[in-house]
View (cartoon, helix red, strand yellow):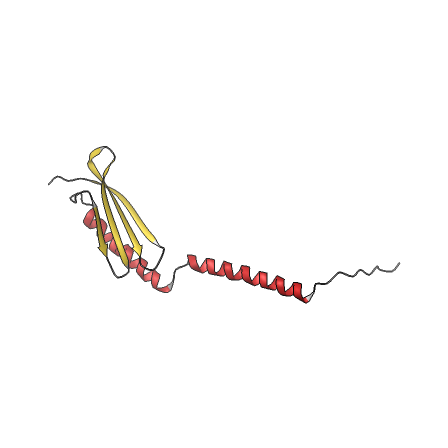
Length: 120
């Protein structure tokens, strides 16, 4: 009772090269996709500065004294758009939407807040 020897077919050098190229292409595509989602070194500072400026804009524009329209502010890192609109059918309410766009990036930050309109 001898063991049966079975030979497995091997792959050719061309098949091995093609398989490794496909593997490397999939790896490169996935690596570039993941790095596109992460922060670049300069974006971290820009995001912090944008958050700080947005907080200052909330203090400035959400007091209920601004007329209903769109305002804009430009900074080194990008721009902030402040849109003040009436809130549904409430005459004494305003919806304030603050959106920060970072220059050279696809990242945005958006805050929405309701405020009572003042008639000073």
